[in-house]
Length: 393
Image (cartoon, helix red, strand yellow):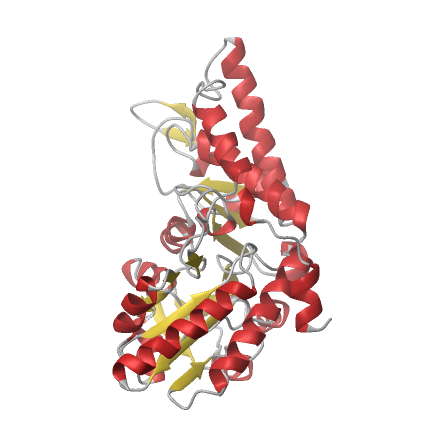
């Protein structure tokens, strides 16, 4: 499908997003996505008209909310082609990675990549793992040939991003899984930037853990998902109510997964909101969303490539994200001037300082698209960058 066709045939859904005010061009979806009215309504109803606690009440509304909460679990599990008892609700991808890093029974060496988000670096360090770093290919993808050569039986974990939050680089997850499993290592995938735009089938991917956050998937903040097909092998890492089987002062036994990882009152409202976000995204269709965002990325990269002052980072086939630098202008200045023109981008190290050092820059400017983005956003950004050039020229 051509770029023009993809952009022309994709539905205009901006009216569904009350945060997208007229004249404002939101290009920071990789940081957090705007919320459709359907998600807002679901959270308002869950917090108001339908609110009650789950799992413990014997009254009707609590029972109804329990059914809705577990239905949300089934809905979200189905979104990644998983079974409902294979996903635990956590506060976000950061907590999910921390959970695995701290609870894994075979702490040893972990292979990360140069493009990882800090939340897929720091937890492994804090939990006492020995970290090795896989290099990138020339166009900014994780070098799986290098990973294959680096992995040894001492590695018990490989943890890679499905899509880079800076470069938009997609990972061949199935191949990464095969490479990890050859030496007996497990594979954890950070899917935060993938699930809003790529169909995910965890069984087909072959990974051992898959994590993502709700707020990047057009859902609420404060909720994320940890998927694993062998979660019962992990001990709980937080104690409290709900995650127990039986408690005495001498000994406590724990509930099976995923309940053992959901200590305390869960994120009830957020779970229902995330289920509504999944419904919304699947109504449009992930393949259509991906094609639409690829068309926007292609259009923007083509226009920026014509500017001698612009350096583009990442592969041409980046998924929904375009990072760049302008000669002689700090990304923060770019972002500030663009904001004056009603264009919102990200500027900084994007929680990926090792990647910035690898790229040889202190920071980048980043435009990231969502399903509500359109050609007008690209035009506004390019025109805004022309203004930046005039100011600093």
